[in-house]
Length: 175
Length: 256
Image (tube, rainbow over all chains, first blue to last red):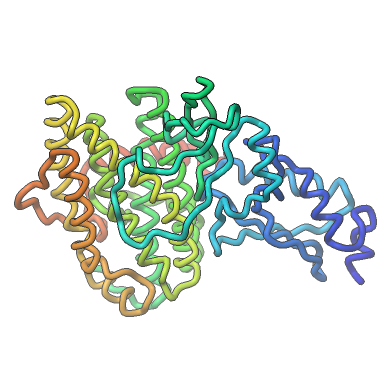
């Protein structure tokens, strides 16, 4: 197989590539990896080299370029000579793709993981914010939480406060 | 009106409308960076701008790929003059006060949500992919701008008056959002584009719902301005482009 010859240091199959990718941290959330985040959709050896398919999170996510650079650097360091990173838009990324391990790591880092996303809306409806489901506090587990601001440190997170323990916390928005 | 000879030229022209509307609105929102009423609002507006800019890059990249010779997203964003832009007039209206910005955003977001829902069913796979991705982001934008309209309209006497004034101005640019010109008809016929006119009742029903909660009323007899999609713009766009394009034009080929 071409792949065996091309990638002696990284191993022959894609399992070792997945293992390397699982070590690459998300630039904005260093406590979870890009594999935990669910953006790596496919890894495949082709005659021309290794093909890695990524599905970006948000259209304007500034971390995207850094992630591609990190992937290139890590794989080259581990013997992958020819790498092709492909962007796949459809199906669109969803927080449902974040692994259970990734969600546990978020919680451990004090970030409430995304609530389940239920289907796609079809009709416009205006509902008051109070009626929206709220995340539990990642610090104390209280359900008495409220939204402070739709955007926190990054586009993908909102800022909440907990009325149980009195601490602010970030919530990774479901999308 | 421009004649569109090839399907590729028609498609790229249609994509420019999508890419330019999101690009210009993103640039407008960037104008609030460092000036919004609170730090949180500053961050939020910049994040909405970031989404719209990301979406614009996808639309413009696709538009450029359909042109001969191929144009890059940067060439399209930085090297065209005002009359070559195909954004709707609503997005080039000045930021004004905070109510002006939020009302403009609200009218745009509600339309944008419905438009993207339709385009996510496009027979063109790339149009469908971009729209499916963008609509999830825009649902958040709409929630936010709707809440702001309610907060301002149902706020103080002053914020209410500002919001009502903003609505009076912005409503003049709503007709264009739903106007179906020759290109819109052709793209609808090809299974690629959306039936904008058919979306208006649903749009208006939602807008009325939010305005009722905001104690605001939709203006009677607004103007029917609709030339932006064909490249006829107001002077505000010229000033905006001068600022947006200055660096790229004065340093041709610069990388950043």
